[in-house]
Image (cartoon, rainbow, N blue to C red; front, side):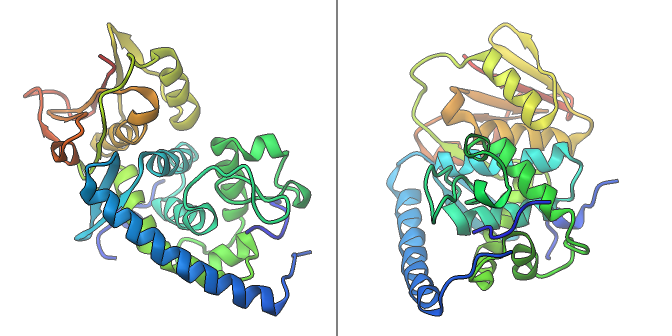
Length: 296
């Protein structure tokens, strides 16, 4: 958890764009023991989720598959989108996702140790921002990156050292256990693992709110989407950017009511079956930079 004020394999990370609070030793030992048990349970629950037919999202990269529930994947998408909008390298998203996994299991918590809240368990009393601000995932991610970019050499440093420099954790070694998960999610959500993220979801109860989704695209990714009937259309700068937008949309599908997403000639279609893990052939000949978000 933050203690100070804010002030590989072929993966996305290879593509680079142009007064601390101390805990007593006994608390640290107990905390580490509890964390170990929690992580074991967390992994077990996720494995059961992936095979049970429950709503879930799956990402694949470097022959590794990770599975999270839609809420966690949505938050990972927000964290990555903020990095992309800021022009940060994918390594920044990896570090941020791994940190949020350790701090909150990628959940926007309204509680925490002392006054810690949010995805990164940032503390208002330590200068990270107001409580309401820190409960806004976009603000929280920006606050994290504001601190991260001040760490010289963070792009190549061990994640434990980077996280310690930003978070001032009592157990910095704990972040390393989430690095692989962070790298897989970041590789997908930055568009460097095309068509490798899918979400198995029940049909939406209502048609998605296009205006709200346009607002999210603008705020998180800095993109303007054009309405075309019940679809939103985005023209990306290149194919990698298009996949980043498309997989962001899939990660947001549960919360926004998205029914399908097309990136160039490939399409993800919402379904409660395992078919939704994969992208299928879509409209042949579509531009690889064209992203269409289908709300109906």
